[in-house]
Image (tube, rainbow, N blue to C red; front, side, top):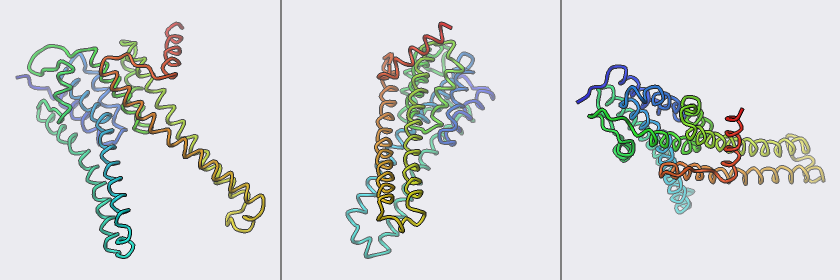
Length: 298
């Protein structure tokens, strides 16, 4: 059986431990894969596993967290009378809610730490549920000398770029790094990465716009009514300030409600890419394709 070298172990350990940075570490597994993809399939596979865990796995943990949050909310709602009448019940709910929240976060950190330890010992680590499936998808077998399936490598990296749209700001690191390091080798990966970057940027723009509208309404209200808000509330100016504030906040809320739809679109794009589709986002895909074609022609 092959034994990874010290350098290979270091690459693999760093790729897995980068998950502890909660999104900011996405760059490391992409670099590990790009730099070692043809010199060490062990590092390439471990890096791709780490990339998948941080992108797709993050989505799973977010969904679990939301389910726990929803369950906790409805539990409190159905027991609101007891909570209002008993401080002990309310405190117990708070401890349980935040306890589960931190427990979920802890569970997210455990697999990559175990993976890092296993790789440091030279073992061929596989994440539960994902590892063996990815090995089969990539045609990976540590015991033989065959190369990974290059097409599926690119598809996995491209899909991770789409999946990571759910990671605000730091999710850009995956598609940007893939584009920079492997864009010249694979125009297909470059296009998919460009699409993912464009979707990320659009979602960030939506969030920024919502934030600007929210604070705009608030500051207009303060400017028209004063800091206390009481002296001129009954005047026409005060009413205008109130309308502007609630109007801008309502628009900001509507914009924020659109953001999860684009997160879902990113997950769908990643899934379609893994299934073999040359996926294009509605409208955005054509714009990106035109831009990439123009850049290629320059």
